[in-house]
Length: 267
Image (cartoon, rainbow, N blue to C red; front, side, top):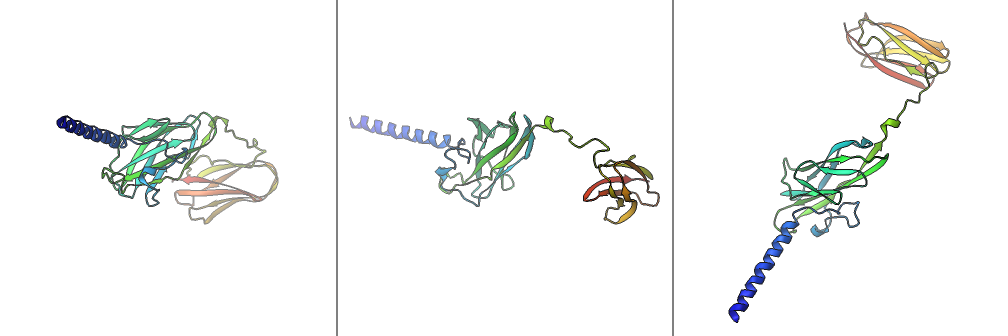
């Protein structure tokens, strides 16, 4: 009877150890639902957030509707024997790039703690913008761990949320009035020039006009126009025969309006 009891006790201990090991190693797979977009943010099983742990979101701040781009989460400081992360977005889709991350309920998290390189851990992933215009919030946290087998000594922090502006590029149109109703300075032609080039511009109202050429240091090279002109389109020739090859700036002024462009002289 005692022998049977001892065997049962031993079996219980083994089963308990096995369950604990399963629980422990399962925790190595990252957890979703812990960013500042979730109802229960933070890696609270590792204590309070540690400000010294740096978690950065990097990637484009502007995307077109439906555009896909690559983003990264970088974790540094803390114990950093390894690190994990959780990423979420308010709209759009997150997708994994390699086997270091997995997707859960639309969010991304690590498959297992990732070892550092050059004193930081970088997770790379893809994000696809939604099919509507607006602002999207991307949130993340990072966990810097010591791989001791327990939560003791591990540290974590939130990343600053990243705002991504989603634009409908097909809706962007040129609303400037057509020449000669618009105030416009066109690119000189030919460009590059050797040595003569033509500069075209248009005025949307009458006034005192200056058309000036400067070198790369801002020194005035030539004043092509300086006087009163009426509404309309104009063309001026500029001869750079006396100048060295290089980049020059020409600037059109009408009242409080100014337009500048660059031109290249090659001899």
